Length: 174
Image 1 (spheres, rainbow, N blue to C red):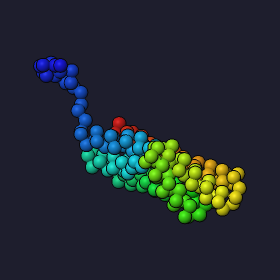
Image 2 (spheres, helix red, strand yellow):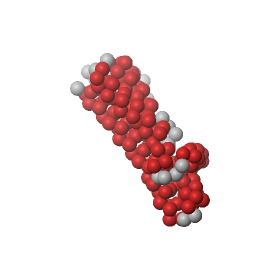
Image 3 (cartoon, one colour):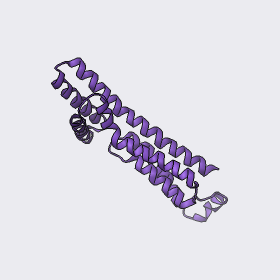
Image 4 (cartoon, rainbow, N blue to C red):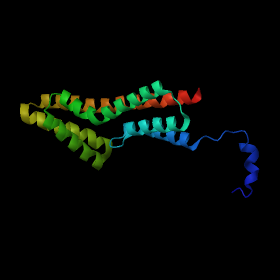
């Protein structure tokens, strides 16, 4: 434990202390990328918040870059909210089954985390497809497409929020 804080003065003299709002902005941007990988956490929304906090604190980026960053952030939010259902629907199941798979995947996430999400979606889509077609191969294929779609939305969200983070970091360094 340091008893005399003035001993640190030579160590920190000349080192710029960052604006606390900029630190919060980058914390939100980093959390946005990390939480894009974890289901049920609002990664893209945190990224949008990070952009807005950084802009509010610094006045950078300009209006055009701010609009572009917010558009990418909103696209990531839409992928987060609609991507899983669109992937399930694209696999050939009905809207009702897509919604049911989303609910079961959500419940599975609460119980078993990301694995529960994947098992919940795949299991629901497989059972629904098997009940309709009475063919296991069709059910497996449909479930695989739906699960790949859910994983694809995670990849897209992570790429979008990561690009926002990198862009703001470059702006901060310029």
